[in-house]
Length: 240
Image (cartoon, rainbow, N blue to C red; front, side, top):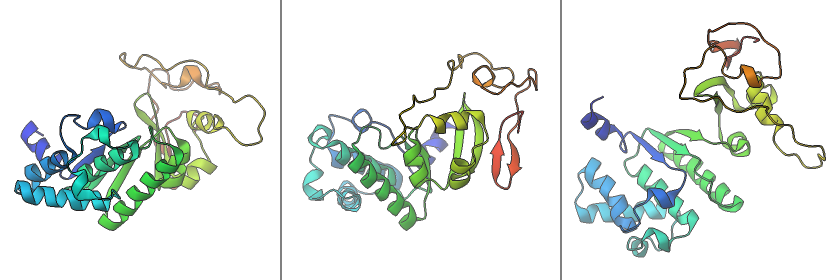
Protein backbone atom coordinates (compact mmCIF):
# COMPACT_ATOMS: atom_id res chain seq x y z
CA UNK A 1 0.00 0.00 0.00
CA UNK A 2 1.10 3.61 -0.49
CA UNK A 3 2.07 5.41 2.75
CA UNK A 4 -1.20 7.38 2.97
CA UNK A 5 -3.26 4.18 2.77
CA UNK A 6 -1.08 2.37 5.31
CA UNK A 7 -1.51 5.35 7.65
CA UNK A 8 -5.29 4.85 7.60
CA UNK A 9 -4.90 1.18 8.54
CA UNK A 10 -2.13 1.49 11.13
CA UNK A 11 -3.56 2.40 14.53
CA UNK A 12 -7.09 2.09 13.16
CA UNK A 13 -7.73 -1.44 11.87
CA UNK A 14 -4.41 -2.83 13.17
CA UNK A 15 -2.79 -1.67 16.41
CA UNK A 16 0.35 -2.65 18.28
CA UNK A 17 1.54 -2.75 21.88
CA UNK A 18 5.32 -2.49 22.05
CA UNK A 19 7.71 -4.23 24.42
CA UNK A 20 8.86 -1.27 26.53
CA UNK A 21 6.25 1.48 27.08
CA UNK A 22 8.78 3.99 28.42
CA UNK A 23 10.52 4.04 25.02
CA UNK A 24 7.22 4.02 23.10
CA UNK A 25 5.39 6.80 24.94
CA UNK A 26 6.49 10.38 24.28
CA UNK A 27 8.16 11.54 27.53
CA UNK A 28 7.26 15.22 27.03
CA UNK A 29 3.57 14.78 26.17
CA UNK A 30 0.83 14.20 28.71
CA UNK A 31 -0.92 10.84 28.67
CA UNK A 32 -4.26 12.34 27.63
CA UNK A 33 -2.74 14.04 24.59
CA UNK A 34 -1.07 10.82 23.44
CA UNK A 35 -4.36 8.90 23.53
CA UNK A 36 -6.38 11.79 22.07
CA UNK A 37 -4.03 12.12 19.10
CA UNK A 38 -5.12 8.70 17.78
CA UNK A 39 -8.79 9.57 18.15
CA UNK A 40 -8.46 12.94 16.40
CA UNK A 41 -6.54 11.39 13.52
CA UNK A 42 -8.70 8.33 12.86
CA UNK A 43 -12.09 9.31 14.32
CA UNK A 44 -12.06 13.05 13.54
CA UNK A 45 -13.12 13.90 17.12
CA UNK A 46 -12.72 17.36 18.60
CA UNK A 47 -10.05 17.79 21.26
CA UNK A 48 -12.68 17.78 24.05
CA UNK A 49 -14.39 14.68 22.68
CA UNK A 50 -11.05 12.91 22.28
CA UNK A 51 -9.99 13.68 25.86
CA UNK A 52 -13.34 12.50 27.24
CA UNK A 53 -13.00 9.27 25.31
CA UNK A 54 -9.39 8.94 26.48
CA UNK A 55 -10.58 9.06 30.10
CA UNK A 56 -13.10 6.30 29.33
CA UNK A 57 -10.33 4.18 27.81
CA UNK A 58 -8.09 4.64 30.86
CA UNK A 59 -10.94 3.53 33.09
CA UNK A 60 -11.55 0.51 30.84
CA UNK A 61 -7.94 -0.62 31.12
CA UNK A 62 -8.01 -0.35 34.90
CA UNK A 63 -6.36 3.00 35.68
CA UNK A 64 -8.19 4.76 38.57
CA UNK A 65 -8.87 8.52 38.70
CA UNK A 66 -8.71 8.60 34.91
CA UNK A 67 -9.55 12.30 34.49
CA UNK A 68 -6.62 13.40 36.65
CA UNK A 69 -4.28 10.84 35.06
CA UNK A 70 -4.83 12.48 31.66
CA UNK A 71 -2.62 15.31 32.90
CA UNK A 72 0.25 13.02 33.98
CA UNK A 73 3.47 12.45 32.06
CA UNK A 74 4.72 8.87 31.46
CA UNK A 75 7.42 9.07 34.17
CA UNK A 76 4.71 9.72 36.77
CA UNK A 77 3.18 6.28 36.18
CA UNK A 78 4.33 2.83 37.26
CA UNK A 79 5.47 0.26 34.69
CA UNK A 80 2.15 -1.54 34.79
CA UNK A 81 0.21 1.71 34.40
CA UNK A 82 2.35 2.75 31.43
CA UNK A 83 1.63 -0.57 29.75
CA UNK A 84 -2.10 -0.04 30.37
CA UNK A 85 -1.80 3.38 28.70
CA UNK A 86 -0.20 1.67 25.69
CA UNK A 87 -3.15 -0.75 25.61
CA UNK A 88 -5.59 2.19 25.77
CA UNK A 89 -3.86 3.86 22.82
CA UNK A 90 -3.87 0.61 20.83
CA UNK A 91 -7.58 0.01 21.48
CA UNK A 92 -8.73 3.59 20.94
CA UNK A 93 -10.11 2.88 17.45
CA UNK A 94 -11.47 -0.64 18.05
CA UNK A 95 -8.94 -2.43 15.80
CA UNK A 96 -9.69 -5.79 14.21
CA UNK A 97 -6.17 -7.02 15.04
CA UNK A 98 -3.98 -6.24 18.04
CA UNK A 99 -0.27 -7.13 17.84
CA UNK A 100 1.29 -7.47 21.31
CA UNK A 101 5.11 -7.60 21.18
CA UNK A 102 6.43 -8.99 24.49
CA UNK A 103 3.83 -6.91 26.40
CA UNK A 104 4.88 -8.16 29.86
CA UNK A 105 8.70 -8.26 29.58
CA UNK A 106 9.51 -5.38 31.97
CA UNK A 107 6.81 -6.25 34.53
CA UNK A 108 6.84 -8.39 37.65
CA UNK A 109 4.95 -11.69 37.62
CA UNK A 110 1.80 -10.39 39.37
CA UNK A 111 1.45 -7.42 37.01
CA UNK A 112 2.20 -9.71 34.04
CA UNK A 113 -0.82 -11.84 34.91
CA UNK A 114 -3.03 -8.76 35.28
CA UNK A 115 -1.98 -7.39 31.89
CA UNK A 116 -2.52 -10.73 30.12
CA UNK A 117 -5.94 -11.15 31.77
CA UNK A 118 -6.85 -7.61 30.68
CA UNK A 119 -5.82 -8.31 27.06
CA UNK A 120 -7.84 -11.54 27.05
CA UNK A 121 -10.95 -9.76 28.41
CA UNK A 122 -10.65 -6.92 25.90
CA UNK A 123 -10.13 -9.29 22.97
CA UNK A 124 -13.21 -11.30 23.96
CA UNK A 125 -15.42 -8.25 24.59
CA UNK A 126 -14.39 -6.53 21.34
CA UNK A 127 -14.23 -9.73 19.22
CA UNK A 128 -10.67 -8.76 18.33
CA UNK A 129 -7.90 -11.03 17.06
CA UNK A 130 -4.65 -10.88 19.05
CA UNK A 131 -1.18 -11.78 17.80
CA UNK A 132 1.09 -12.31 20.83
CA UNK A 133 4.87 -12.26 20.25
CA UNK A 134 6.78 -13.74 23.18
CA UNK A 135 9.85 -15.74 24.23
CA UNK A 136 8.12 -16.65 27.50
CA UNK A 137 6.71 -20.11 26.85
CA UNK A 138 4.71 -19.96 30.09
CA UNK A 139 2.88 -16.87 28.82
CA UNK A 140 2.36 -18.59 25.46
CA UNK A 141 0.98 -21.77 27.06
CA UNK A 142 -1.42 -19.84 29.26
CA UNK A 143 -2.76 -17.39 26.69
CA UNK A 144 -2.48 -18.65 23.10
CA UNK A 145 -4.94 -20.75 21.10
CA UNK A 146 -2.50 -21.53 18.29
CA UNK A 147 1.29 -21.19 18.28
CA UNK A 148 3.75 -20.48 15.48
CA UNK A 149 7.38 -21.20 16.42
CA UNK A 150 9.84 -19.16 14.34
CA UNK A 151 13.53 -19.67 13.60
CA UNK A 152 15.70 -17.47 11.37
CA UNK A 153 12.67 -15.50 10.22
CA UNK A 154 10.55 -18.49 9.15
CA UNK A 155 7.79 -20.46 10.84
CA UNK A 156 9.21 -23.92 11.61
CA UNK A 157 6.18 -25.33 13.46
CA UNK A 158 2.54 -24.30 13.72
CA UNK A 159 -0.12 -26.07 15.79
CA UNK A 160 -2.75 -25.73 18.48
CA UNK A 161 -1.20 -24.79 21.81
CA UNK A 162 -1.96 -28.10 23.56
CA UNK A 163 -0.78 -30.16 20.60
CA UNK A 164 2.44 -28.21 20.26
CA UNK A 165 3.41 -28.43 23.93
CA UNK A 166 2.48 -32.11 24.24
CA UNK A 167 3.77 -33.28 20.87
CA UNK A 168 6.50 -30.94 19.52
CA UNK A 169 7.86 -32.17 16.20
CA UNK A 170 10.54 -29.73 15.06
CA UNK A 171 13.99 -30.11 16.71
CA UNK A 172 14.07 -26.39 17.52
CA UNK A 173 10.68 -26.54 19.28
CA UNK A 174 11.86 -29.55 21.27
CA UNK A 175 15.03 -27.69 22.20
CA UNK A 176 13.08 -24.67 23.42
CA UNK A 177 10.77 -26.78 25.58
CA UNK A 178 13.70 -28.76 27.00
CA UNK A 179 15.30 -25.50 28.21
CA UNK A 180 12.40 -24.67 30.57
CA UNK A 181 13.46 -25.04 34.24
CA UNK A 182 11.32 -27.49 36.21
CA UNK A 183 10.88 -27.72 39.98
CA UNK A 184 12.77 -30.63 41.48
CA UNK A 185 15.05 -31.08 38.48
CA UNK A 186 18.65 -30.88 39.73
CA UNK A 187 20.23 -31.77 36.41
CA UNK A 188 21.95 -29.17 34.26
CA UNK A 189 19.54 -27.62 31.78
CA UNK A 190 20.16 -28.72 28.20
CA UNK A 191 21.12 -26.04 25.68
CA UNK A 192 20.80 -25.69 21.92
CA UNK A 193 24.32 -25.94 20.53
CA UNK A 194 25.88 -23.37 18.24
CA UNK A 195 24.65 -19.89 17.36
CA UNK A 196 22.12 -18.34 15.01
CA UNK A 197 23.56 -17.72 11.55
CA UNK A 198 24.08 -14.22 10.20
CA UNK A 199 20.59 -13.36 8.93
CA UNK A 200 21.96 -10.66 6.63
CA UNK A 201 23.16 -13.48 4.35
CA UNK A 202 20.79 -15.67 2.36
CA UNK A 203 20.31 -19.10 3.92
CA UNK A 204 20.64 -22.22 1.80
CA UNK A 205 18.82 -25.35 2.88
CA UNK A 206 17.59 -25.83 6.45
CA UNK A 207 18.63 -22.87 8.62
CA UNK A 208 18.69 -25.07 11.74
CA UNK A 209 20.81 -27.85 10.21
CA UNK A 210 24.13 -26.98 11.92
CA UNK A 211 22.49 -26.77 15.36
CA UNK A 212 20.27 -29.83 15.03
CA UNK A 213 21.03 -32.91 17.18
CA UNK A 214 19.40 -35.21 14.63
CA UNK A 215 21.60 -36.08 11.61
CA UNK A 216 19.99 -35.12 8.32
CA UNK A 217 21.42 -34.87 4.82
CA UNK A 218 18.19 -34.29 2.89
CA UNK A 219 17.32 -31.30 0.82
CA UNK A 220 20.71 -29.99 -0.27
CA UNK A 221 20.36 -26.27 -0.89
CA UNK A 222 16.55 -26.36 -0.87
CA UNK A 223 14.67 -24.86 2.07
CA UNK A 224 12.19 -27.38 3.56
CA UNK A 225 8.56 -26.41 3.06
CA UNK A 226 6.00 -26.08 5.83
CA UNK A 227 3.80 -29.16 5.49
CA UNK A 228 0.97 -30.77 7.45
CA UNK A 229 2.05 -33.87 9.41
CA UNK A 230 -1.21 -34.23 11.38
CA UNK A 231 -4.55 -32.39 11.33
CA UNK A 232 -3.75 -28.68 11.83
CA UNK A 233 -0.14 -29.42 12.79
CA UNK A 234 2.51 -28.08 10.38
CA UNK A 235 6.30 -28.54 10.46
CA UNK A 236 9.18 -27.22 8.30
CA UNK A 237 11.61 -30.14 8.51
CA UNK A 238 13.03 -32.73 6.10
CA UNK A 239 12.61 -35.48 8.68
CA UNK A 240 8.89 -34.96 9.32
